[in-house]
Image (tube, rainbow, N blue to C red; front, side):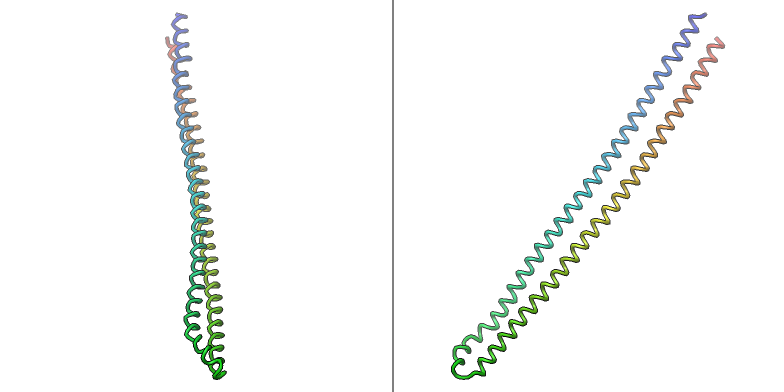
Length: 195
């Protein structure tokens, strides 16, 4: 009689806790895997943020190069236009220098007008290009900041939600294991008493 009772007690204290422990280990592994997935997702989002920053900086550099090239082209174009306007008047300088001073005065006025036009055009173009550059850089910075803020908010919310879910799963598993232990031991105890 006592040997049978011992056998039942041994089976109730060894076999069932072992199965429950295995179940707990499996659940813990699943929870740890979920945490790893969350960490990897966070790292991936951080990598996306870094790539966006690099893209923004690259875009800003490309825009600066384009604007610098545009400045050079505008200066060359304006200088070529001025040269094309001045060069036809050079023969008049040679022939009219000794004949009369009116042609020289007109040529000087023409040269001064062309120089003023060139200077004003270059200044305006440079100002416009600088304004465009500033606007592009500001827009790039604003876009990057907005994207970073959105990604950070998403990551924080995701981590909080997943953490709450994982904690809830752990608590639920603990409650289930406790209930199973209580039911099993109660059933085994009743069985021993009846036996």
